[in-house]
Length: 268
Image 1: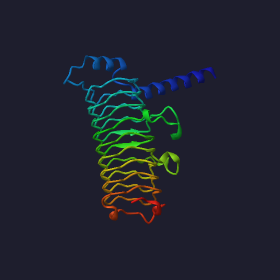
Image 2: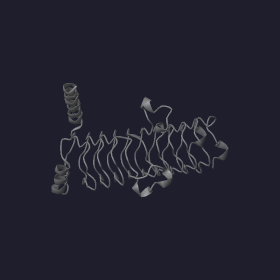
Image 3: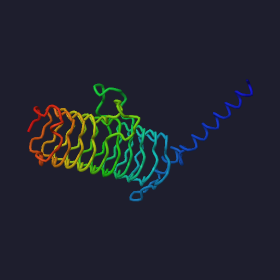
Image 4: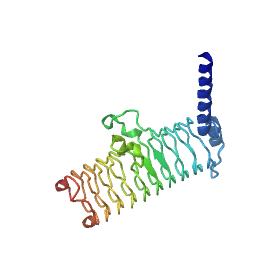
């Protein structure tokens, strides 16, 4: 029995080491901090292709660093400043993004799946100041899924972005609905984006480009589309209770209204 236990223990240790090696970071948090401290104005540090998975990088200013295809899986990024940084193709899945600032960053093709943002679990108790900022970010083709309530996407380029799960494990569960309650998309370009089944109550899309966006099955209670271009957008199965479309362009071309609920309460 003792011998068998030793064998099993050794096997488990080997598996743990193997798994750890797969996710091992290429640098330490100290390495990253020192590199950023030494960065010269106009000469951003290049971390492209590096694995920074699992590192505690809270509070750092990346000073416009190049982070293309960097792996930040599970990293602690609270209060991190990514202003102007290039994170094209980066992976930020399950990272902690409390108060992270991505304003003006390049996030094309990035994945941000199931991040941790809030210190509370329910929307009612959420502190909106903990939400990350993506103001003016370039996020074409990005994949975001999880809880992003109160996040700021003002003026961002989100063409073709996906805010919906593609994981079959999420089907028929509450996890299949992205949380974007009170999200701010004012002036953003969302052409062709997918918000299927999203929780978008009180979200704001004023003066945004919403052409061809899929809102199928989404909760858009009191969402504001004032002045937005909604040409060809789909609302099949959406809840439009008191959704506002005052001055919206292309409303006569939207589809799926016959399957949407509370269309009699839409404000135009």
